[in-house]
Length: 195
Image (tube, rainbow, N blue to C red):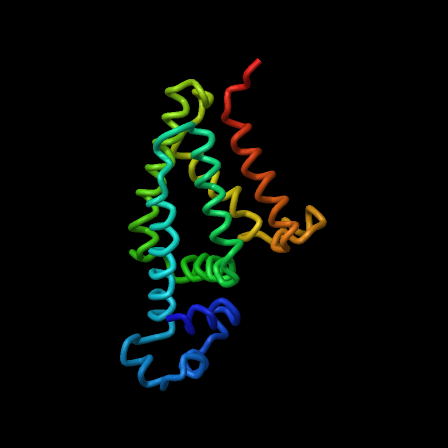
């Protein structure tokens, strides 16, 4: 799985081969086909494993108590840092988007786990609304989705954003700028301003 993850991230799904993955793993191609009927099956298995790792870490993070703005910042920073600290994750995410656009959605681990994370984030935002910390005209469900897209946008759309902004959003400095700006922007857009 580690070799498949690396090869898919580095070469992309279309250019990756079962032979190349087997060579990287130090096993025979026949062994891969014993466990996975096709390259797409292996890619789906990699995505399922990746989704389990990422979404479990985010979902298990304690952010249901304490100050809602602090908790929301913490979960968005954790999501961002997962992508920043994993050299293969942004490429795998882009490959997953292309894969699902081509073959259609599948009932994988992401589809099974993502709604629970969204519910937790929406509950956190609703708590912020109920306690008077966040604006009342925010849809918690929609905002939680927007927050993830904006926060991780520097990875998903690095070419477009880097071209527009004039710095590489994947570089150490560029990632730091995007992380800080995106999360501050999101929090400032829903916080109730104090006089």
